Amino acid sequence: MKKILLFTFIILLLNSCSLNLKNLPIPEGTFKIGTDTFIFEDKSRLEWFTEDNENDYRRIAVQMWYPASEISDSLHPYIDNDIKLKYIAEQLDVSQKIVKGLSNVKTNSYYKSPIYNNEFPVIIFSHGLGGTKIQNSINIENLVSFGYIVISIDHSYDALITILDDKIANFDSDPGWNANIADFRSDPGWNTEIEEITEEEFYRVRIPQINTRAKDVQFVIDQLYILKSQNFYIARNCNLNKIGVFGHSFGGGTSILASHLDSRISACLNLDGWLEPIPNEIISKGLNIPFCYIGQVQKNWTTAKFNEQKLNDFHNNNSNLSYVFEIKNSEHMDYADIPYLTRLTRMFGLSGKAGKTLTKDLNFFILGFFDQTLKKQDSNWIERMNANYKTIYKSNE
Image (cartoon, rainbow, N blue to C red; front, side):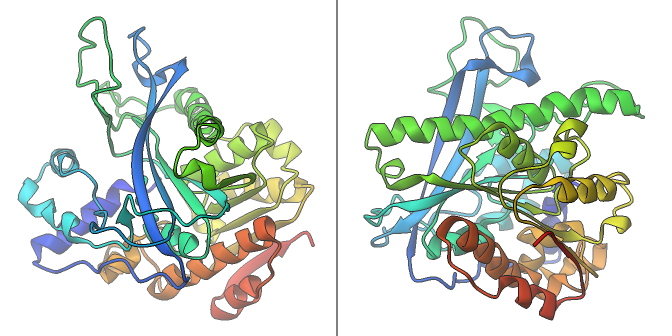
């Protein structure tokens, strides 16, 4: 399947052509945006990707965005650590000089701004294979500007690269790698010379992997409860009775599994979600909370040939509100930031004709779904998407 690693590849091409990337668009809501980053360590889970080391507990990097009462003097960068540029360059076997343009993209989020004194619903985002916690920053910033606290996870060893705080790593002996950098290890056979992966080997990796990701989401919710009890400056304003999740690609599947496992989640949205790794018993049962899927025409997703059937079955088995939107002339990467940052994605088949305008319409669409399900506020988010694009639309209403 197409991975978000190609996101970086396109940016490299732009920089090699001396072209500039767009800054993130100004959100349409009224709230200013603050942000902060953290490392969480789960002492109840050993790291699945480094299972040979008994001292390595699961650690994830998270970024929190929240409504701010005023701005600070520092905009948070799109790429939050220049060390990542080195690993992006090495992954693609190019000069680090070529990827430096990533550091120039401006966001609308201010580092450690004072938080607006009110409770807000919480939404957790999960990225796709080889993705990052910032890959849907446009959607995230827009949600926050309308009064949500949004938390995005770098799923360690599944993200392109995750920088982990060295103050948290505490090994009795040398683990044999840089314990504070989690590189991408999520493809089956990543550490071997295997050229072809059988279906059995594929799912032997994907099932425990999606379970690990879903537990990351649950762990973040656990941490929010703890931090709220400690009056932590962001968590104290989290309304933990109103939690939503959304994700792109494998992050969409992760959101579904997390919603199945955790009754604290009240709404689930998928951006071209990858459902193939989800166990069939969950597909057969469906969810009992509102669900929405928006993505490419599923029969065109040739590298995920079972996704269409699994999505249809899942939709039909959901016992609460369930919506499916298949957008014609859209591609997998149209559901992340990259088509907005550069239109050249269309030249390389990563973005379809719909991608020219879809990013901002997704802002309205995602906001509308969560407003309806978490805030009980109605809008014309369904009608607008069906009016602006050629869609295959299903609903159980």
